[in-house]
Image (cartoon, rainbow, N blue to C red; front, side):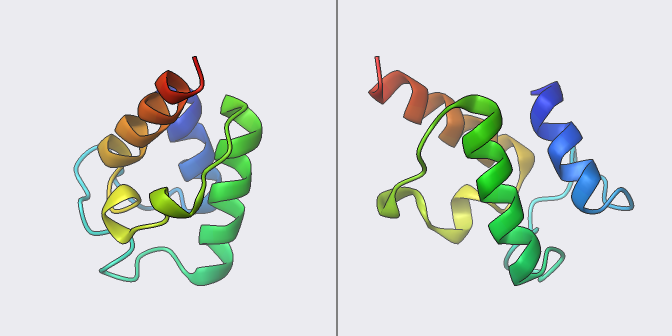
Length: 77
């Protein structure tokens, strides 16, 4: 999860990602940053985030993103 937190802190270091649960719905991350976030996650974790994963709830918190990353990695095994 440290790599994910590093990606998020590069986007906006002023957010407390460990407690925030409304990153997308609360518009704390703008649309340009979302594209960068998805690209960085795919590259860092060597995964493809397909359309079925492109839901706000998968990006509203670091914990939701981490669960999604792990689920995608488990699918790929």
